[in-house]
Length: 214
Image (tube, rainbow, N blue to C red; front, top):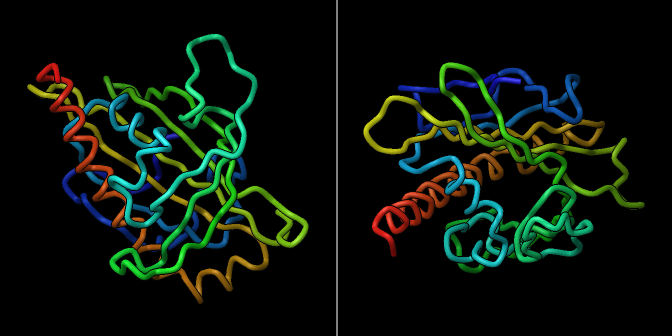
């Protein structure tokens, strides 16, 4: 699956898409999609590292100011770090729908990592994909409302220094998705923009330190 959203010279951008975009787990038949994309001066692995590093969310993420790991899958024996998100990790994002306000209340959202895999879009455009979605509950079963957030970190080949395109989209499904769009859709869209800007700054800072050997 290639990112079915804009890229290249038109970035950065954040938008409520004209039509819902499929996701790897749930496919078509979504209700609406919020998407964003930008270029980041870092390697795919460095940008992915920022997103997977749960304890450091407060340092860069004003939209989700805390990421708490609730449970990890069995260790694979490959040096798994229990402080980092990995395939199957259950975690809680503490969402602030007014990311510019210090007084914005936290809305805990229980999630699970669905996919963590390398991607290859051809012509040297390799990188990583991670997806997650809310965990269903008795009060909010998946048939009523579900979503999946897809993030891709794709290398831009041929440059003198590392650069990637960051693609992110979340598609909402189910009868309540219309209500979500009407009540908080614009706020989530703003949150995506803030998340993207924070990720870009942190990934570029981290990549620079790595290249300088710090």
